[in-house]
Image (tube, rainbow, N blue to C red; front, top):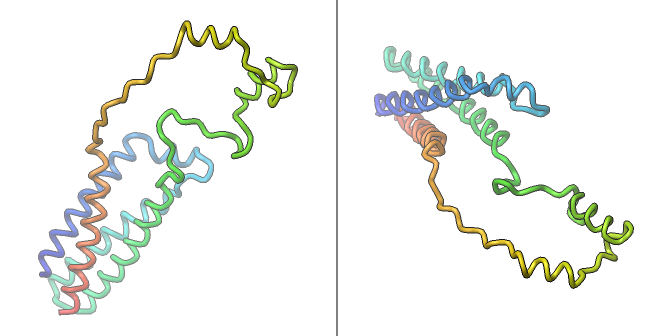
Length: 181
């Protein structure tokens, strides 16, 4: 069981290292610093550092066999999982919008483009906008073609963070079981 924890921890750390390397190589650190309210680099590097520290403590437990080292590694792993959950929570976009969808300024107020078009047509009052026969004739003569549904292509890159999360959960469960035996 102790070596299953080690293997699970190594898989989790390798997936996390891949994500961290990819994030750094694509300029994630500078992008997060430049964005107001961006993800603090201390959170990401703290998560990675705690994961490696816990792994080293687990290796020391395997070498020494001291139960206190096992529970110390589990405690470090708990902190690592909490930092990982914080990272996911701060990174996850909410509410998620579809690509190309615009966000209105307020819920009750139409977007500025609609206000401008309506205001120009009828002297500034957006509620007094009228549809004319010329507008209907133009729409009937040149209708907008219906949008074709786009095929859905799954993104395999999403599987890496999901696999990292499931590997972290299995590592934690296995570590608690191994430490309690």
